[in-house]
Length: 89
Image 1 (cartoon, one colour):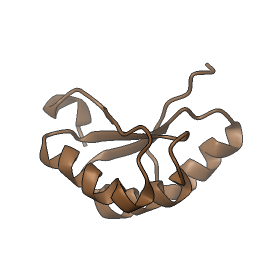
Image 2 (cartoon, helix red, strand yellow; image 1 turned 180 degrees about the horizontal axis):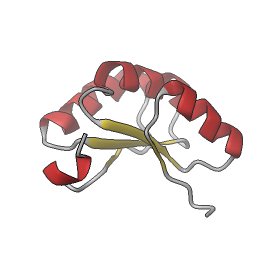
Image 3 (cartoon, rainbow, N blue to C red; image 1 turned 180 degrees about the vertical axis):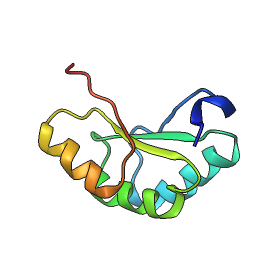
Image 4 (cartoon, rainbow, N blue to C red; image 1 turned 90 degrees about the horizontal axis):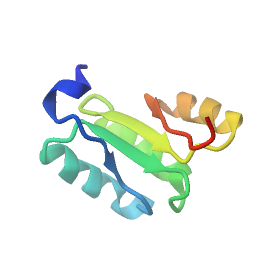
């Protein structure tokens, strides 16, 4: 996927909850975004991210932000995240 060529922006959905995640991600993808970041300080990100990857991982680059610990990177990779953003490096 050439995610930088369509709309070179990342939709950051800070504070998104699992019950609204799929609708919001679908809306930003429909608007032309093909990269989405869910910050780990969002409520219940452990539920939202796998659901988003399952639903939209073939349509957009799905990633996580505010990643603070190495074990989170491992968990996110297992969930299928393709983008990791950390403020610590």
